[in-house]
Length: 505
Image 1 (spheres, rainbow, N blue to C red):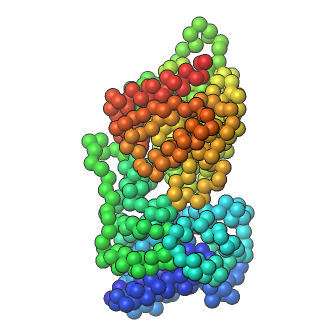
Image 2: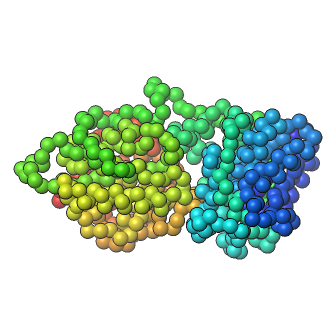
Image 3: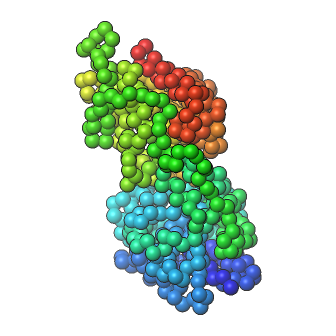
């Protein structure tokens, strides 16, 4: 007999699991919907000291009192933090961890980092005490898609929501690693933007930390619903949980390749010469080796290359020291421009504001350099870094001569509710008299990225924005590393010529 411990997200308690738990019990399993201290009918138990550790201890006591030799711990949203903490304390009692439409947090990460509401994040950033009010009626979709939730269940969710003790969200999750090898299943809700296909793309071409999703202990299921499957599809969720407990599920694997290095360490597709490089804090300036033709004193134009992410804060080498950005920076310098690369702080999808600050500081530093013509600057965005283009398109300065983007996200991907509304290039393209745009498309792009590009192009055409499209028909996301073909090389060369041409006009 399998015993399931069911832990829900913020502002909720055990009632949300009622139907799923009932179906698990009918199928012969034990089910323990959890109401944590300070939540639901335990609201009076919350005090100034109620934090994540309080909830971890709640779960440890529950596990210790269950007669079954092992349990399956199911964490939804915030609930995954205490689930992982309890598994770390009692790894021998845990048969499997199930992450329900929630990314696995890292050791030392507080739940506040992934809070999707920017106003709540701002309050938590001030070391908030007391309790955080639940979402207002009609705003729950900010915390995850409510698609499929019946009206009466949504009304009950709003009515029974309880304030969340602030300390549960701000206290970092501390793990010893004792549970690191436990089998783990991700249940991905496609209407909230998660899917097995998206996991596959992240494993194959995303930041290196996502390679852990291809570990043999990981399995995945898709559920065609929003972020609250215990309310929208309780019967289907119960069946998926039973299958997960049995070890079923899809495994994502790393594709076989001749070069066994991680994708981000594969060589750049062009053989470009090394050039002088100066490091200035977060910023590197790749400098042309000789003086400008015909005028030794004339400052150079500059191209600022903006990487995507999220990138783990401890990733080494950092983006600017990877073959990818070294290749682009040196390539621009070899053609007579200053190639600028930077490490910005896009460590999670809630960090675009920090990344935008870093980019603005980098641009100011570059424009102030006497070797750079501050009136001839281009910005070139990659992947999810494309969201950072929005503010430059909404209010383009006169010195911004070109905006380039390669296989970008030009609107937040489904489920990226933590991204602030100002980072939506699709909403602002063509609304101001801005510079020309050079857009490189990968023909084998992931559908979620491709959809944002098509939305962007539709808006650009409607608003009269000038967009040059460079197509790589057989290219994948990150084709400069994973598809080093003659076609790919030709398209990179074409895009660079176009960007530099706009700088020299």
